[in-house]
Every structure is written in structure tokens, then in C-alpha cells.
Length: 322
Image (cartoon, rainbow, N blue to C red; front, top):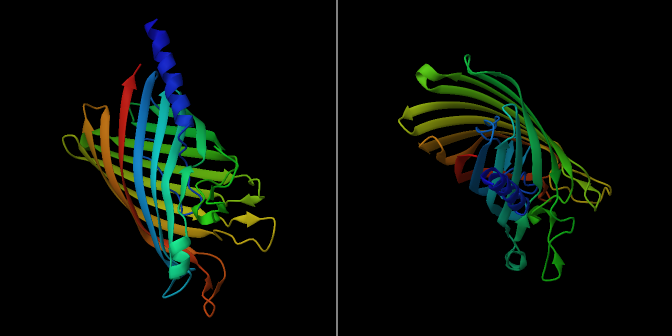
């Protein structure tokens, strides 16, 4: 009976996570671009990870050129919360579900009249259910190679409508389409000096939504250097490379949210570990290179893309041994 209750708990948590969709945001960039806890779990270990993230966007870019006093949007931002639940089925296989919710996706315009009537978007993002396989695990050499694949799914295919007005795609909480996620995770540990080096690659590929609009694929490569600073405190430095392809639409008149970009981030993170099971982390996304593709008309102030300024967040994770 005790074993049955444990598996009922697993089913309940995965069902709960399906109601609170996480994954990649499509309007303002990716809320989460890589996680140092991306490997497989021990058998019958359940990991629950919650996250809050705030992102802020300001200043238009065309290629790597900063455009001053340009474009209709003054700035934009989002507040995002997520839940990721992982479970070790065997010593080689881990299943995982990502889920989350936009508290708001907000745009502020230079035009004061337009700014007053603009409504923020909010709601569930896409979900991701994935399976991870430990292709090579060598505890003695502290090496792990993990492969993962999953399916992105929409919580709704209907666009968000506020006050009988369909919100623009920039503040819609979800791409409203299915897709595929692939992952590769490499880890090398150096226990004598409390150091870990991790490499994570993730690709998100989206299918067309009911409007025949396709959000461009996103390829994220992250290098993590993790070092124990003092007892219970771990410092992590992440260098993240995001390459996004252009969106596509069936009609050439459709305004594309993104025409592609190449961004590089420095992400410092500090983690406090309690009892080897609880982990509280704070982090900050700082872009160090920006390249936004697409056409720009400097005379009319059209084209170009509003750029990531910064983001910060907090996460809490806990491992349960079932």
C-alpha cells in the first residue's frame, strides 16, 4: 500500500504540472535557457523545481547596431513562474515535464494614446514532456552523457482575447502549436576540488499554429562551471549561446515577431544547498553579445527588433526519495 501511495503521488504531481505550462516563451525570448540540473536522476528519485523569472527588453537593434530613438515600443517585460517535475524511472531513464505560467507579458509604447489602451497578455505557455537516457555514466571518472527528446504541446490553440480584442502576437503567452525538443547533456566532475563542468545543448522546433504561423526554432548551448565556494554554497557561471531562426507565416503581409537572432549571455548564479536535497538559487541573465537579423528602415523607424536588456530570477528545487 505504501508503494501504491508513492506512485499515486507521482501521477498527481505530473498531472498538476500539465496544468501549469512552462517551456520556451515565444514573444520576448526564452524564460529559461538551460539548467545545470539537466542530467538523469537516481532510480525512484523525484525532483521538483520551481522558478520565478523577470525579463526586461529595451532599445532596438538591427544586426549588431544599436538604434537610438527608434521603433514604436518603449520597453517590454514579463513575469514568469514555472514548475519542472522529473522522476528517475530506472538508473538510466528519467522522465520530465515542464510547465509554467506568464503572470504578465507587457509592452509600453512611445505613443501615449497607444500606451494607455495596450493590454498585457497572461496565461499558460507551451508544455514539454520529455524522456532522458543516460547513454554513458562512469561514476569513477565522474563523467555523464545524457540524451533527451520530448514533445512540446499547447494548452490552448485559441489566441488570447481581452475586452473583445485579440492581443498582438508579442504578448500572446503561447505559440499555440506542437513541437519537438532535443537535448544533449555532458558532465565532468572534479570532486577533490569541488568543481563540475557541464555542457548542455537544447533545440526547440515548432510546428505551425492554427493561423499557419511558425515560431522559429531555438538552439541553446550552455557551458556551466560549478564550484563549491564554502560549505552549502555553490557558485555557477554559465555562458549561454542562443541562436533563433526567423519566424514564418503563410501570408507575406503578416508581421513577423522575430526575423532571427544570435545572443550570448553571461549568467552568474549562486546556489545554497540544504541537506543535499534542497537547493535555492539566484541568477541574472546579462547579454554580452546581440545580433538581430531582419530589415530595418531607419527613416520610417520600422523593422529592427527590441533587445534583451537583462533578466533575473530565483529557483527552488527539492529531491524526494520514493
